Image (cartoon, rainbow, N blue to C red; front, side, top):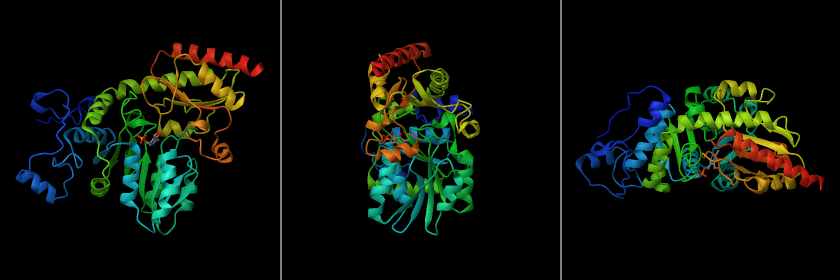
Length: 398
Ligand SMILES: Cc1ncc(COP(=O)(O)O)c(C=O)c1O
């Protein structure tokens, strides 16, 4: 039995939407079956395109159906497809919509994996891309050519946390009849709904805030029904099917998204305020700081805030690494969006292979630290960070 969620508000939908109440179960049970009985209905569904048909688990499973419809509802989207990773969602989506001879516009500020796919792999398939300035929608418009098919942005970029003016970008896409795609991973559907601002498709690495507990790898694309159907038809040949266990964990994680996210955002804003006046800190990037360059845009696009924070430790990369290693419980690790705080230096992780001059141009200067602020007690976080900064001061002065 599948009950529909009649609640209208985000928290109610995060808990109830999409759940498959099988045999009266409160949560969607894990369905391990790799294949399903071929009935007349299934044959009919297969003839009509097979999307959402329980036929074979690479095509669809009870658990992937439950969680993709939950995220589609939270993003105010018509439909959605679940993948085994965020990169799988990105690559399948772009390869479904672009062909030899097509062009797209993106930004060098995007997630490194997506940037590598577009700049290093796509030329092999005759797909061209121009990288524009995420802070300047006019630069995206100027990059549009006769063969441009889509615009690709991220709501909040990694690791400088630039906030994209999604309304302006969607208007440009509409004016030029292009598909507008937004990776909303850093914001989450709690903070921002790009579809309500005019985007056609929204992508998530579910491995981050949606899962929320650093215990799964998954991805989704949600949006316009016809586009999702086109992407689905390529997904079944490309093969990025999501495992039912992962979908179960993801569904469980999303049920507390609206409870976790305000604490991530409040903790990050409080730490940003304190770091901003710390003698060991050169600069801080957070959308809550009134002197942050994207403050005005952020007030419109992500008014509830963000749990992602970045800052520059005085003394360069050596000092930043020393600081990370003196942290007592904040983990030095890549990834983000879990309940626990993680910090890393992009120069030796996500942006290791980017030439130093490009890093500097993007704002990733020596001493740069990216932090995914967790939902621990903020006073404990501050004590840990402050003692590590004090130890780093002694280190650079010695
Ligand atoms: C913004 C963003 N998009 C996509 C991805 C890729 O997601 P996954 O690691 O689940 O493949 C990441 C991973 O860090 C990311 O940060």
